[in-house]
Amino acid sequence: MRRGGEIEGAHLGVSRFSGSPLTWHGRVMAAVLAAGPDAVAGYDTAMRLLGLSRHATTDAIEVVTPRPWVPDRPGIVAHRTRRLERCDRGVYESIPVTSGARTVIDVAGRRDRTAITALVDDAVCARVTTRRWLFLRGRALRNGRRGVGLIVSLTRPDAAAEFWSWLERQADREFARHGVPAPRWNTRLYDDRGYVGVVDALWELARTVAEIEGLRFHTSPAQRRDDARRYNRISRRHRLLRYTWLDIVQRPAQMAVELLEALSAGGGYPLPIR
Image (cartoon, rainbow, N blue to C red; front, top):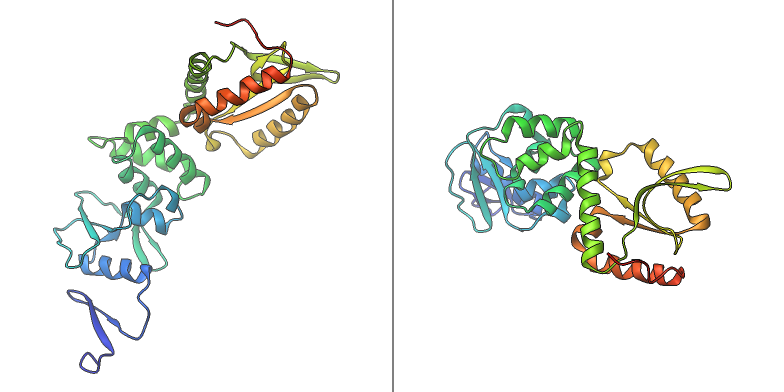
């Protein structure tokens, strides 16, 4: 069959039918097979397989293997690991791959804090892994691994309150840095129907409220439904602006412009400046 051209070499020791189109998935499978029986797709390649493509930063096919292996084709990167337990392995469309939790942990070493936080939020919300399992595997594998301490702190049971406290302080600093008048934080709000709830930031004279949303997996579906009803009641009498944690971290200047415009439109600007 090889002489007749029906089969061609994909890697050393790995062949393929030449009549079939060579897809990206096929190239990944061929690379994993060539790397040996215990090899798996990992890092950015695993993220693409698991549905987290937006977090991938390289097009190279990345393979994790417990044995030394030098790829015989360009565009393939081999990562040697001393520890790849059964619970850190999975299969996606017949391709051996690192589990969702292990993929996030491995990739964390080459991401900054913002990118790690966004990846954890997306991975848990997309059910690539669970919060509890990511916490447990992070705690087990954190020794000497860059970025894994942050994963553990984001996923531990009491993480939501700590993250919100940090986010509120960060927002307050960005308001001051960009000239936004000081709001009242964590204020109880009422309307004609009674108690609405506690709002994150309130500018009373301008009747403007800013709500700051933390990590999605820190809230339950029931909490999100309650928040939606609360937002509707707030917006009956106040200008309501909603911001994510990424807005505060990555787009503070744009957020400040929007807030200043809302305060001006509300007739309460200028307000007392810090």
